[in-house]
Image (cartoon, one colour):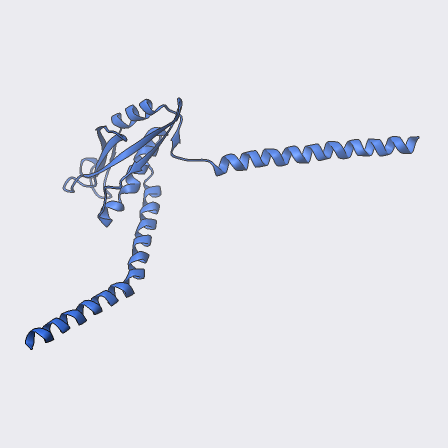
Length: 192
């Protein structure tokens, strides 16, 4: 009889350990799933609140060797169909670069705000897109602008652009060779 009790007691202990292990695994899976679905561009504000915060926000950063009024400035020019129209000037003499903060309501108390700089076609302007993203994040997270994050993203964009150019060099050389051959052929035919 004692042997049966000890078997049942051991089974109970094993059952408790099994429940503990399953619980820990379930909790870990829940945390991992939440981390995998984390979006740093989702903010705990309604769409209207996000628009208001971005319209009121201004970022002014000094240049490395000059005062703030000669440095980088980012500001809103007003509300837009997508969310908020943003503008940036990287120096007092530089042209204004425009972008939009596209705001999407997720629910009543959460919105996603991302920079939509699709109108930027020049490579130099594309390098400035992370500035708008950081302006949005810093404003809505109520923290200081992080230039280091922007620099890392700009470096990654520049490296990507350079690798694309290097990948296109053989194709561009082939096109140039074809154009030169066609030009030479046209010149020979025009001399006849």
